[in-house]
Amino acid sequence: MYKMKLITLVFLFLLLGMFACSHQATKSVGVDDKSSAVTAGKPKNAGMMLVFSEMSAQEPEKDLRMIITDEFLRMDEGPQSQDFLLYDRSKKTIFNVVAEEKSVMAINPPESTLKPAFPMLWIVKSQTSHVMMRGQNADGGNATHHQFLLNEARCYDVVTLDGVLDDALVAIKEYRITLANELKRNYRRAENQTCYEAVNIFDPVNHLQQGFPIREWSEYGYQRFLVDYRTHVIFPADLFALPKDYRFYSQ
Image (tube, rainbow, N blue to C red):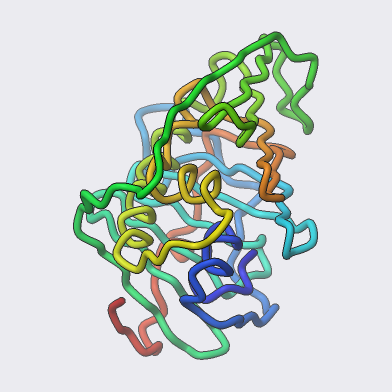
């Protein structure tokens, strides 16, 4: 996923044709496995790490790491990545870092009121699911499968687990709203992409209203599931620093 210049759901940029591919697998500062758990208060750079497996119709299965604190959401392919996306939650700004080009692109779109040229009538069907969370932090909560129909056609599915990762869900919603505003700014209607555009551009948090999705998949070939997560981690400050010797520009 992070071969794209803007590090996000890969199909967004295959559709819009906004950026070219770029990736360099080199050593980077990663999460310290010996980091101390937060025991009193909330130290700076304390937060959680989530690891997903993700794929789309155009890209093979890959790992996606999210590191979330009160200030930032960082996405990359793991400790080896020098390419990464950093979302500043207070400034609502996305920074896309591309090591091969030694560049940092800042994206701070204004709020958009652009409406779709098609109706968006959602129906949600929910039922108990027996899907279990993977990894050492698997919880025994109740899982629910939610099926989202758009204009009576199946569009998106999520499986949620009760009471899991609510703070992470807030950060991801913030990021998706900012990204959707950027995508609206560059929007060009595509044929046979109604579901995709509804989920990612015009209603970017609708499928997240039922709870944190431990598994999700779409009718346009995108899927992701949560492999593992860790909470109460203090992360190195380097993970949230932008390279000073890179070229900065704005989208």
